[in-house]
Image (cartoon, rainbow, N blue to C red):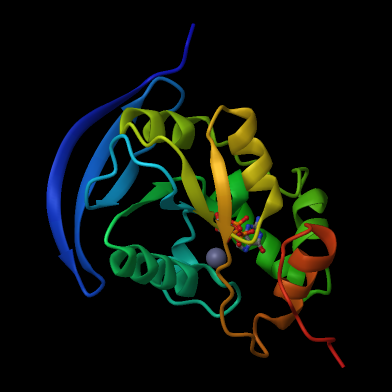
Length: 202
Ligand SMILES: Nc1nc2c(ncn2[C@@H]2O[C@H](COP(=O)(O)OP(=O)(O)OP(=O)(O)O)[C@@H](O)[C@H]2O)c(=O)[nH]1
Ligand SMILES: [Zn+2]
């Protein structure tokens, strides 16, 4: 059966990054609360700036410096606000799809010396278990014609393209590098092919 999403409610949210319309989606694939944060008129438009952000409770809400998620969320909303139109899809796939409990266990393994990829594998998971079907369906529901994807992750572009999303361009989203995220970003560049310029650890 073909997967579906349904736009259940739309509401106006003024933020420090400007005003957006929040769309709440239900879907036929899982019971998570996926949402889209939409700026301006995107229906029928080409080259719409789009950020597909995966939930990171520690980074997005607590301001953790172990990862770049919180800062990327702020930067993406600023970029979309400045462009005057665009979409941020917030997918509830915490911890690259392994969930919060496993991500926190992975952090403890990282503190014992494993990197972000090997910690996931040690816990019996893939390095990245995310899926983008729901994001593709949401973009289709919003009638977005083609996008410029705000990401450093080439795999995200490949997966969306396979799902029929027309990605015309990539917009880089590089955050500040500091002591707490250097190894993490380095591993993303070296082992997950993220397009990041990270200095050597030395
Ligand atoms: N399993 C695991 N998940 C993590 C870790 N650090 C961040 N995450 C999760 O990773 C997801 C964000 O993915 P990232 O790899 O940071 O970035 P991305 O979305 O692939 O790429 P960008 O579009 O460039 O940001 C969120 O769901 C975070 O909760 C970690 O060390 N282990
Ligand atoms: Zn994070």
